[in-house]
Structure formats: structure tokens, C-alpha cells
Amino acid sequence: MGNELSHVVVVGPVFLDVVMAGLDRLPASGEEIHGASASWAPGGYAIGAIAFSRMGIPTHLFTEIGNDELGAVIRGRLVAEGVEVFSPPNVDTTNIAVALNWNGDRGIVSYTQPFHDASEEVSQFLDETPGLVVLSARHPHARKICEVAHRKSLPVALTLSWHPEFLVSRALQQLLPFAQHLFCNVPEALLATGQTDFRRALAILSESVDDVVVTRGAEGSVALVSGQFYEEPAMAILMVDATGAGDVFAAGYLTAKLRGFPVDQQLRIGNWAAAQAIGELGGSTGAPRWEQVEYFLESEVPRR
Image (tube, rainbow, N blue to C red; front, side, top):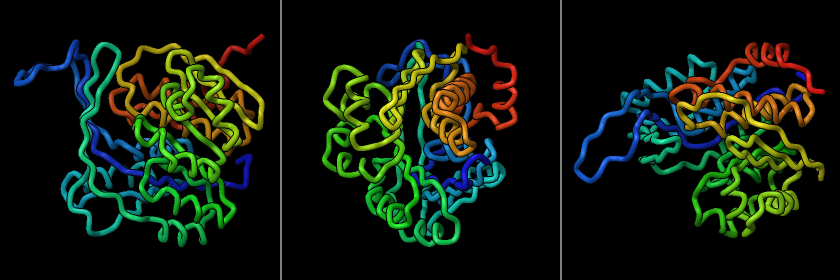
């Protein structure tokens, strides 16, 4: 490792993701249509946790997994991927999300159990194993978890998601100063700042967070780190399923940072990792291992 920080603590909801792909439209009311392919995989914050673990980072996931058959399947997959799972014992039902992919876009229908307050468990764990905390900004207990990390002088990486009411809330603005890293896409950055230009949005977000990364889909990604702007193009690949691409990107970017790579390489590795993810059904299915990242770096044509 190129950094003393060698553990990642991921906090956020986990789903059983059912992905239906190859649709040319959404069904009308009462209609059944057929997809060209379908799959399932651990979803939500399990995607990032699996991605970190595959890249060789010891990963610990604080979440809610049900005591039902679906929960047993997801827990088994996470353990097989090397992720240490922390979940309260009294969760009855596993979260489920159904992703419908059509014409290069997707929509998601989900069911989510209530979140539990993991701040005390995270605090006790970080006393023994300090690390980077990766957290859903919209988690109802995000502020308490950020305060735990702050007291222990540990960095926090916040991820945004498309929830318009939250993105314009005071809760988000009050949370940002606790973060050292922030990940979002262009629509999220624009709505959170009230801007129409993503570069201006990036600058505003960087007033609160030192390292802000905005993913731009087919146009790649940009970052503003300690006042310096970086930009990297996307990797060319046929998109099969965009589910979890941002989570895999963030895992690639942060893993590269933990391994001591400069920011431009962090973006490049994040872009490449996300490209591998969208080439497979299910967000965690195509998440690459670090050996694959190394092969990509060794085989990449040097830039002039």
C-alpha cells in the first residue's frame, strides 16, 4: 500500500438486485413484456464493498440484511467475496430492487427496510481498526457516523444519489464539511448547488470538500482536488447495465488513492473499473480485481 490507511468501512443499505435488460420500452399498465436477459446480484452498498474487496482492500460493511432466505444468499455472497458483514440480528426482510434497463437508460423500483443507527458499532470497530469511512450521504444516521469518524480523525467519503428533496436540503449542506471526498454525477451536482454548469457546481462543492469528483457517464469524470482541476475521458465499452457504475468508480478511485497513485491515475482507474462494471449485468458482477487493474495499467498505451 502507498498509504497507512489499509481498511475501508462501508455504511449503507444492501439490496438483492434483480436486473432486467434488453427492454425496448417499459410495460404499460397490466402488460407483460419480456427482456432479452436477466440476472441478480448483491446491490446497493454491497456493490462498493465487493469492489473494494476485489481490489485487495480489507472491507467491512455495516448494513441491514434480513433473516430470510434472500438475506442468507446475499450474506453468503458477501462473505465469499471477502467482505466482513455487520448487520443487526432482528432484521426480518431483505431489501429488494428491480432495475429495468431500456434504450440505454434504466429505472429502479425498490423496497427498503428501516435503517438502524450503526454509529456506536462503527465507533467501536474504528477503535480497533481505523480506516476510511465510505457512507451514503442520505443515510438517516450519516451525521452521527461522520461525527464518529471526525472524532477519530479518520477520513470520510460521501456518495450522493438522486433524491431531489435531499440534494437541496440543509441536511446535506451541514454534512459536507465532515467529508474529505465527495462523489456525485452531473445532475446531482447541479441540483445540490443550484447551478447549470457542472464546473461551477464543482467549484461550489469544493468550498466544503477538498476532493470532489463528478462522474459524467460517456464523457468520463472530473475532479477538483485541493483547488486543482483534473479530467479523464471515459473508457469505450458496450454498456449492458449501468447499475452500480458510480459505486465501482468510487471504489477504483479510492483504492488507487490508498495505493499511492496520483489524481489523474485515480480518475483513470475509476473510469476503467466502472467500464468493466457496466459491461456485465448486475453492479458487482463486473467489478474488477486489482490484478486486472494492474494488467490494464501495464498494457495501456502511454499518452503523448
